[in-house]
Length: 106
View 1 (cartoon, helix red, strand yellow):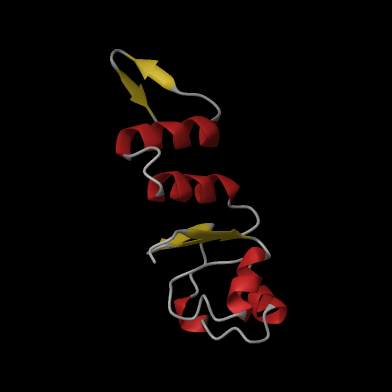
View 2 (cartoon, helix red, strand yellow):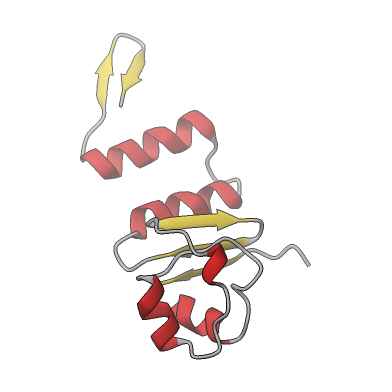
């Protein structure tokens, strides 16, 4: 139904155990951790070792990827796009925004 689903940390194990990760690119705390927490998980070939992965309507993140996870959610929901999203991300990633002239340095 094209409804976005987002899962971070152990919520990815829940999705993996019920087959929701089998056909989509995804991440989690680690592949061994995901397989241990989700004995029915069969999505090994779609696992990507990144802090956050967005594939279609599915967004997943590992336990340390809260900022990247938030960025993917804001993008998916069209809350912020392109330049505004990158500026938002840079602010929280770096703790400040440099303003020089009329543009912001990241």
